[in-house]
Length: 321
Length: 102
Image 1 (cartoon, each protein chain N blue to C red):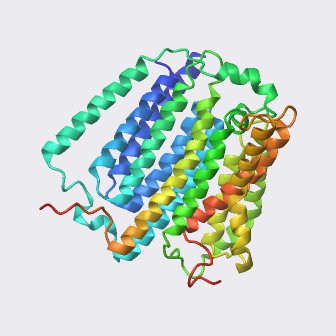
Image 2 (image 1 turned 90 degrees about the vertical axis):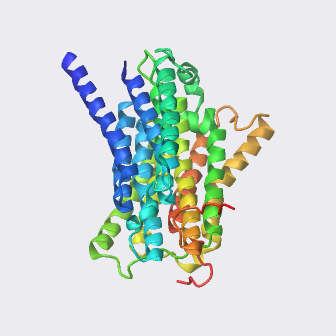
Image 3 (image 1 turned 45 degrees about the horizontal axis):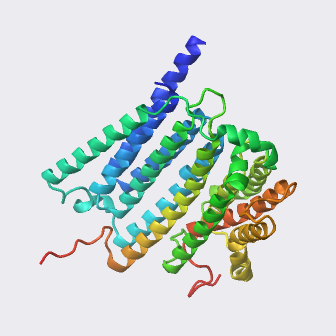
């Protein structure tokens, strides 16, 4: 037991220091490409940290989103601005903190030091035993329609969080589309390895996504993780030059984008009218409601994340594949 | 000091590192990276402090909030990157202009 404890501590120490080091290396790297690659590594280490904190659900979401999708988004944006500049950005001299004078950076650092001490002190002064809402959650879990407490919180106890989140996703897509950015810069022909791998991986990834969606009721997994995997599959397909049929680009795509939010809104209004309270499912219908909400949310999250990566309203202006 | 407090302190370290870069660096992509690191730090504090229980299961309400937060963070990042790309395409710059002093 003692050695196990020591090993755990060693692991935590290495992981914590590694996280801080990677964050610093990400933020201080002179080359932006290197910074993004380090950031992806940081995301992977974060998901190990989530496992150490017994947050398997978050680890799954972080591995798919924090490490995968965010990295893909950043790299695609970097390639666009580097293409525009015609040279690597990292060589521009005003990129770093050239304009900040010594006195100003002294002020910034002293403010941040005060903030660090304040944060550290308040964390250390918290009571060591604060179960929070875990007792209430475990008491009400049998009424929630699912067994996994995280899914119960996300889609039953605090379902309005998820409702608002679906709206945020929708607004983000609208915002990205309204920028009217140029198409992604792609090589005309994808590399053969990527193409073959995409063909093999796509059905597997769909299977994994629906497994995660289904298993979310009983153990770690759920709509967010499944949606993130679907989104990553979409990114992979886009990268290997796969296009939707143009007939599907307009109405069907938009329909799937709003399905999650619309279903959520519909359930919210129905429950408000029937039960008199927002998203309070009628007795006995919680499991079914959650399943419907999760399926539509997964589809919408997946398609939304892929649409965010493409970054451009499909079927607009010169784009007609 | 237990695991929860240790990871909460690491999280606040990430928060401060990100905040410093956000203020000091002018490049917009770096600012977006810094915002993501700040987000990770905040999430880490939130989830680490949820583990301060003597029972085996941590408080899952912050876990659910952080999962929501991760998805919101990625959509905010995508929007920020789209705005940055547009700004760059229009002005050719990668950092915000200072107001000319009179």
